[in-house]
Length: 167
Length: 82
Image (tube, rainbow over all chains, first blue to last red; front, side, top):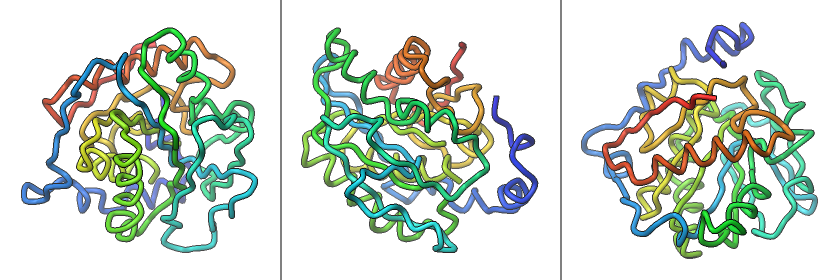
């Protein structure tokens, strides 16, 4: 089990001092308070995956690990890509990357989604899936620009359900 | 930080009219960000779906996460029992 105590000291001091409650939902904020009920059974839903693992496909620029407050951009992947074709460049060494390097399904489980589609557990796999790189210390741009942009793209693809994974 | 980013992205997607669920690896952070629906998993950082090359475990975690989708008593934060 991951606990703050397991994270290395520098990262832990940052996490301890970081004002996470600044981003707690505020009652007047519609983005934080909105609930979208499931409109149909999962077996009829179009499902998309979103991860913060810092994945990019070979033709895309990798995430910029030098931006001090974090790279809030995203990468888009077609639904028929093999997850193993994706590269990972994540600036955080607070987590063990070896599992993901061996099996990208650990964070972007496209192969598992395909199996679930074959078994009829989900409806269809969305035409596009997304990765951010999660070490975003200053999330203002993420909140204002890149997260809403991914949300718009998912909505225009007719996505019903999104599964999100951190690292 | 990743768990915060996931929560913030999740809210934006839910706001766009899509039902969301996320995996959480750090309960303390997800409790503060309070995204719509989250499944806390007792695995090391970097392992939101449990283990590499363990499709059976990965599928069980995804099913447990998807099982939270009909819940509208947000924020939902449940724990995965391996």
